[in-house]
Length: 122
Image (cartoon, rainbow, N blue to C red; front, top):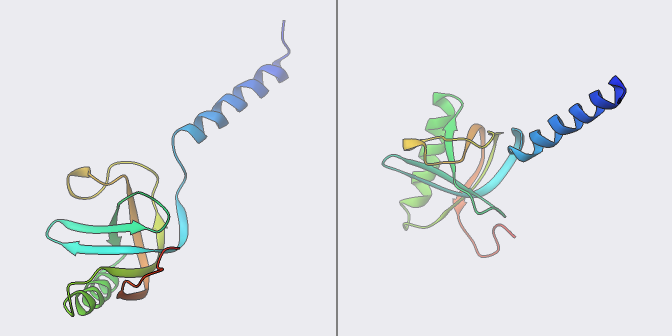
């Protein structure tokens, strides 16, 4: 017969292992990548990841700033737009238009919006 402490230790190890299998936690910080805004589209492609995240500004002021700065760059020559955004990345799930995005980036601050250059996202 096993002791209760051994069984409890095994149970905790299984729970912790299962947590790591079901995706990463949320993450708060500065995120760099490429942004696309359009009809039913608000997509962030983070550097060094083959993912697409749905972008949701934290409030109307942040939404207006991101949209205006994006359009100012994009309308200059229909170029790819590089951004640095402060915010929180969600856990994996189903987000955005028709749930087609595996994560959501809730933007709290727009740090940089510019035309993409060679070498971005090294």
